[in-house]
Image (cartoon, rainbow, N blue to C red):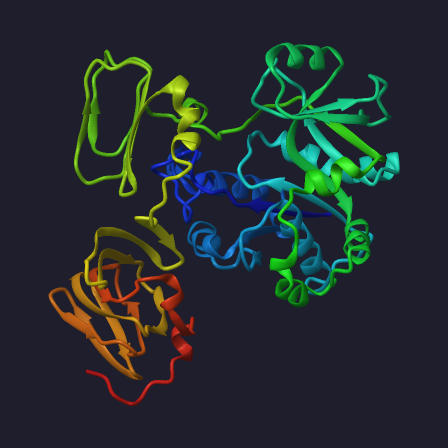
Amino acid sequence: MKLVLLSGGSGKRLWPLSNDSRSKQFLKVLESPAGEPESMVQRVWRQLQETGMAESSYLATGRSQVEMIQSQLGSGVPIIVEPERRDTFPAIALTAAYLYSVAGVSPSETVAILPVDPYVESSFFETVLQLESTMLESGANLALMGVVPEHASEKYGYIIPTSAEAGASGYLQVSHFQEKPDRKQAEELISRNALWNCGVFAFRLGYLLDILQRKGLPLNYEELQKQYKLLASISFDYEVVEKEENIVVQPYAGFWKDLGTWNTLTEEMTSNHVGKGFVTADSEGTCLINELDIPITVIGAKDLIIAASPDGILVTHKAESPRIKEVLKSFEQRPMYEERRWGHYKVIDYVKYAEGNEVLTKRIFISEGKNISYQLHHKRSEIWTIVSGEASIVLNEKMHNVKAGDVVRIPEGTKHAILALTDMEFIEVQTGSELVEEDNIRITLDWEDIALQQFIS
């Protein structure tokens, strides 16, 4: 059995800590068993490792999240990359093509799809594994996993079974689905043994390959990547699940929680105060998360969430926090903080002048032994001021060593890279007509592949 974790998200529901590059699953606001800060994706991957399932697991994600995943899980984690953000059907179709044409997975193999960020106990993954035997026993084309509801919630979709009569392993035949109902509808659905839809389902790989063939889509991963922008942006639920008649659901009665809003996330944090600042004892129910270098003090304020990052500052009543996605729907800005495979950076300042030129200032941290790819830019120049640590840099095939206090000028068109000999930081000032990601012309990712001239200073 193969497991595929879908990693996506626009980053709006947990703004300002999350953004288009750092979605909610990457926020290190939970705590590991060792007492270290831990993100949702790190927690899930750790649980997969503990249950022996990581070796058969993959992550499917867009290009913008690849380096974040590698930063948090390591460069060895298997990643299936979408060329652009679409919806869950295109993402799962591309995953099927990858498993078949690249990983060599048999069409008879069972594939389970699950979100990258469920907040669960280990029994959750045992139930995921059970979906394989459920499919064999039931003969179903799709096997879903449904959470036994604790209460009548309006936040989740529901899976409604045909009856309460269960198969030998406890599975139920599926009648239909109901998107987020009102409370009265939810109560009526629960009386009919309906289950919360937690976004977990399984199928034989060959089942989805057949669907792709009927749609005239290639089964080759590289070919499907080329045609990816032509695929309809539609969810797997709408395109496949709701059209399939032979579906069963396996109930899961253990702990499950969707940490998709500030009020649900803060319920699972071990501390009500993260980062610089102070929260007085009479600020009952208030949670402060501060990623800025300036302190925030909260006095006598009850049931608030105060979150601050380079992207902005949020102050909201806990009960009102789910409104943030609606409030920010027309708000767009470049991410001001990003994690990469080599470290992280924070935007300090950005200015666009009336005459058209732009200036962007970043504070960049690179971990010892890591490097930024060998690249060049056509539309900007850069100046690096080394703040701390030591590094080797390459400029047009010539290598130099730099240390704190050194200044490096990189004109437009100059090929350049940097390797941290120790943990190091530098200030980067970009100046140009268009400061966009598309102007990063990557030559090679690996330091060893840079063709150096025999020149070291």
